[in-house]
Length: 286
Ligand SMILES: [Zn+2]
Ligand SMILES: [Zn+2]
Image (cartoon, rainbow, N blue to C red; front, side, top):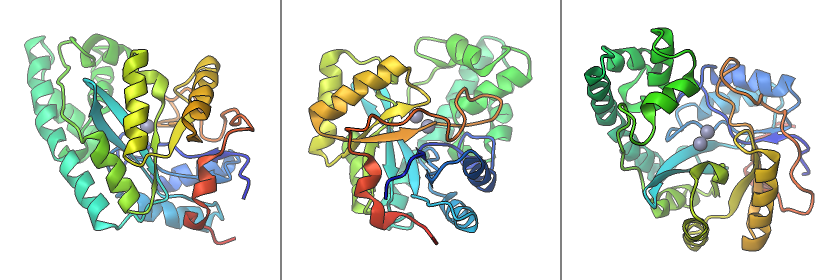
């Protein structure tokens, strides 16, 4: 099947998005998406709802998640698509990696307290709903709500990134873990928004070669996180490493996200789209 407007990356309230899986499904459908995936961070708890909502709308759907891994001192995101979302190996691995979020959030909060920001843990938790899903984005929303910053990107710049007062390093899953959780659950692993990591050429080469060695199959080329120059550059990387290409908005919220679901430019036509590997995994009632 040749999908013209696949959008295989977005977040719901199950991680750090602001819309429900049902509202995202509706928004994807209204925006003309013809193959959709919900990819909450380290979590598959929204998959059943997304599958049901997509089926009710006759919107072809692939299961999804976005797993944080530590690589060369940075956090890299690996998107998984088309897996069995009840597979115990994947569900268990994601559960273990989420376990560290609460401790990190408490440490972030005590650091923020030292620079005069009180109650950040409780404030962020109110947005997250669950201590095992608490993330920097939830802290960012609290700091905007309390007037410390005027928008979430300012919060990240001033407080939540490397060397800033609220930044706490977190040891995520390894690259090999994340890729094996996805592939053992019959899915396909993809490097998310590679331009965002700021790796040196050598580090990036190591990331791609290790990823492929562990069984990774794709790279996001067209994403809400890439400029058109970056999309061109990673189209070349996909050709060089013979990887499939993926496309996804990384939509989080109508007020915070620059790129809406289903509004990205197409993939370069010579690349092999990642959905060509996943046709039997598409949930569809058409
Ligand atoms: Zn990401
Ligand atoms: Zn994302």
